[in-house]
Length: 478
Ligand code: SAH
Ligand code: SF4
Image (cartoon, rainbow, N blue to C red; front, top):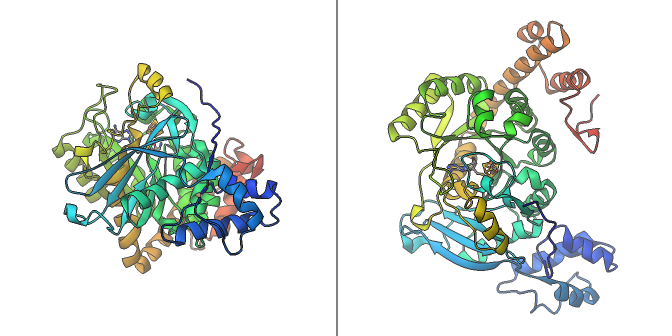
């Protein structure tokens, strides 16, 4: 079923695009400011609802009634909320205004007893960005649904607000690892992220927002410049150590081959000086052998200062019996090789919340009318998957541990950047037929400007690799 444009009426009040547009159309001279004033009021006033507001300082009184007529606090309806027996994970089945269902998972970290459920700190929310997904990864249940629709930025933000209101938690991390490929809903995703990190409203820390992608290279490049530079974290679903194997179950790899993908990874880490999370779903007999671990180690070892590898044991879905979870022994052996032999920082995603079916590959939403049709071709949502487990990892990887070793890491990260520059320079030498590699190995220190000059040359010499937006290069090149 092809993707449909979606119209919402009433609209979500937290929509960072629609509310300012609406206010502008109604004569506001400062629509962004007025929207921010209203959001701030709703978020900071205990028990405030849009309907009950009769005056907001700094907001034009003449516009309030129109806003109340066309917008609501929540366009999403809670269908079901289930919490795991240990209280760590809550899965919310949410129905969108037009009948589609999505899932949002709330994970509370460091929670060992149900007693701590309410008000627990360090909470992560795993949000969906699309209804279904067109990328068709063979092991992912969401991929079988096709792309049924894009969420509005307001619906993405609303998932976070709902988690906070309905589960009474302080949201600290948001991961885009629910249903959908966020880079295929780029404009809405970036608007939602920008709103979530806006200090005047939601005020989340940029590095505690992680966007996971299957590897849409042009969008990753835009992301690097637009959100990465502002500190937002990126995760790449790698899943295989070489192009051939990756392309066999990740169709997107055919459009964006591994060399090009890794170049986008290097540019992200160079430009943002941030680490990138690499997700690797381990499937028995497919990509979990010691040879795969060694090949992965080879691929990542030169990038080890800015890569965090997260191994996700495959979770069974009802969609395809072809894939199986790896044995615990194989997972351990795999992690051991990449970590000990190649020095790549590696974590294994723990299974959490399986009693509420919120583990990887278990997030299934098929109750909307259109989703019911999609059911005929396959079932449910597996991408929604990573939610909770990821969450713990994310907090540990990007959060606390990053802070505690920041100084050392900065030094290491810089070393890593220089290595990446050398690699790039070497590649460039080959592309340009010059001695780039030799020079990189010499005494002259390599700066970010050098790298940008190389990228410039590359743009000139490889027209297939031109980071651009609207037909213009993303970077200001000298
Ligand atoms: N589309 C994005 C984000 C959503 S998927 C992406 O692919 O990155 C979130 C994560 O769950 C991805 O790493 C995805 O590969 C993984 N995943 C999907 N199905 C899975 C399954 N059955 N078992 C384990 N991980 C799975
Ligand atoms: Fe889409 Fe991600 Fe699932 Fe692939 S793994 S089909 S990109 S949701």
